[in-house]
Length: 365
Image 1: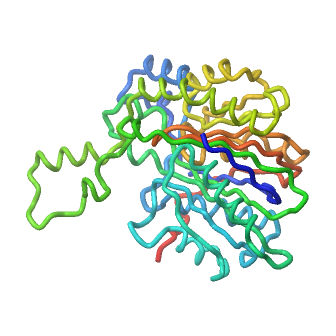
Image 2 (image 1 turned 60 degrees about the vertical axis):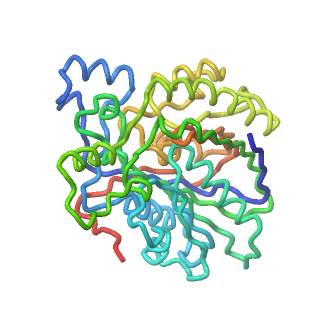
Image 3 (image 1 turned 90 degrees about the vertical axis):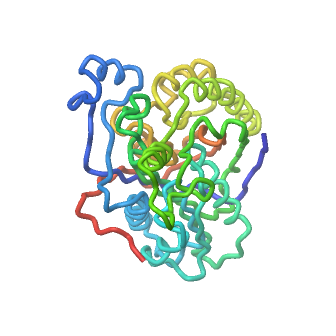
């Protein structure tokens, strides 16, 4: 695993945004029976999920979170030097969604804005990239700031007959603010990749390898049916579970050793919120007590790249406002890709989760 440090950058704030619309299989169990839905809820820890209306995208959730965070911090949009959008659900094939976000948020044209196509590990990678860029920027006083926007609309990738994925995934967006600060404690990062597992969580169709672009001649009904299935999420649960138990405990161990600390010195461990069953196993293998290991699946489900900042915004608001708190944050999954970040955070303005109404106008070019 690669190990890295970043000096002179602090995490200045978190904010998350979720759709106002909720869906619970406990209330509307189809295609499950009521008994099946209850068992799934107990195993996954997901009581309900948030579902974004079709005219909005992950970027809209992230922009809403960023707008609120900028206001809370008292940052002028033009003071932001870097914007990183981490998502597997870009608005367009081109341009990069981060460019559209720059215009919508009113950032300076001097800002560096770009997309990163990562899922469950994306928050750690995006934060690492943005922090490293900030550490090397020659900035004027009052500048040296970055936004890391993580969001996905995973519910749109699910097949209506896929009983394995339907109960798990919801939609969310987040904004994390970083700021250059010579006095900030060092950030410690550990990351790795194993593409041999790429086929176990994937959406096969939609890129250039298996395009959905309409051909010159109509497709046959069989081709249309195949592409419909291949344009939805395919997840091999057994392989995902095996990878997680193999990769994540060593990741946590490496991150603690790299940061020169122990599990006992970490105030809260925040892992990617995959599902409760998996997190319970990881907590036992990594040695964290329940009161310092965050599980926050019930109201949102698995929200991919947004799950770590969403859990922090939802559950650690008062704690981080009091701060400082030492956090270990780790993402893992699709790719295979994994990363962990050890950081001291706080005191910061209280993180919050805001609900986005279906009437919000979409971000367009």
